[in-house]
Length: 601
Image 1: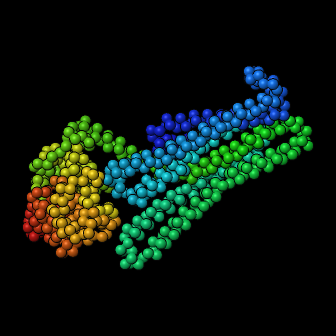
Image 2: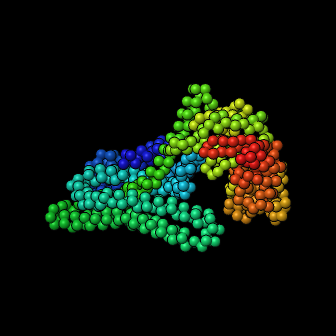
Image 3: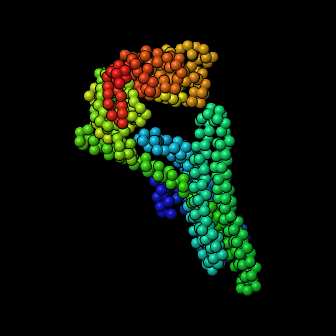
């Protein structure tokens, strides 16, 4: 349990003071509750024997201060006092529960933001080995399960545990023998649910894994809807979904059914025991009815609170076990993300000691400007876990306004080299410099100089305007710059034909547009953000000849004004490049003009 709590505290970084405040509220409300219940017995005794107030110093003193005429008149005063304690206790209990809900759901908000921020900031290689369905599941589903399956049950369990302990102390003071007998009767119920702990964990694991698989099936089936329809494999995805949904439904049914048992078993056992005890005590023990009434009054009132507290405590422990898989997922991911962040800072610190450039990510005073050239100096890169270098000892220079191309067979290292230039992959050795300043002095500033246009442009399900001004809030969109980007990317004619112009929706992933139109929006996006260097990764590979010609014209019009870095399989698209680099096994084996590299090979 200690290990479980340490994981929860790790995930809940920065909220421990609030937890301490909650604990104090639990203790106060529990003490008030026990006080109110503890007064029931004496109150019942006073009702049957009002003159007994004179035997209690405090009550006798209050009676004299009030100057009442008879002991019977004092009973309503005591009743009002007890009722006031219960009312105050109930108000405090309500406020405590409200604060628990606020705290818990606030944690979901904070945790979702923290995870998204971490996933966006983590090194690119992290995502190369991760499934998007798993990342989405962690942000949306596991945070929900952590909130409702870890935080709420943990706080409720703590609250109920405090109440149970205080009530047990009260009952021990009232009649220790009877309390021991009750605990003995209830022990099998607690042992039963302790044994079911591994089952709860197993059902939670099945539920989480099924959720991830359902997201994956939806991504695959709807993500490739055209292919799914044309091939006619809808039933394949339907069967996969049905299989995972069945697992999910069974796991949740079993767990939620088991959660009903604690209250039923505890309530039935306790009530049956108390009834039998009262019935048999008169026959076998010949106990004084007045004393028995007072004792059983306290036990009866305490049972009304103890039964739900005990059952809720057991249910909470079950939920904690059921949610342990979700907690592990979040804990391990946050650990990994934090570890990578620490390693990055250590690398920066080490680099600064040996005089190598430091990535001062947000230092605007070191903002890079591109005036003359970009130099790649002896750069080498290995993918994690691979002994063979993906890029090995490449050196080249790119002058401002120049167009260069990387060509080569699949697996030659073209995309890896571009990912390094984009700042997505961290070098093992070497450096990239802009006008003799390392891009790692300010990686964010370097990336602000680059526009990336891949083979498949990512478009959000929104208007053309918001896709071009990607990531810019509506009130900050510059209309003049937007229109210029549209004109340069040769989108003017298309937009004029659309009924809503730039406000026209493109559909999810741009399904309402042709391939060429999507590519030109990608070019317009890079131009709107005023990027000095445009990286085109197979930007025309998936287009027909006519559409490729239109996109190529848009690209060619940028020659001289923008620096172009092009990856291409179709060699015809790099004919006009100033320099062509032929890659093989992560090395540049030939470079020069198109004629020297392609035609004379």
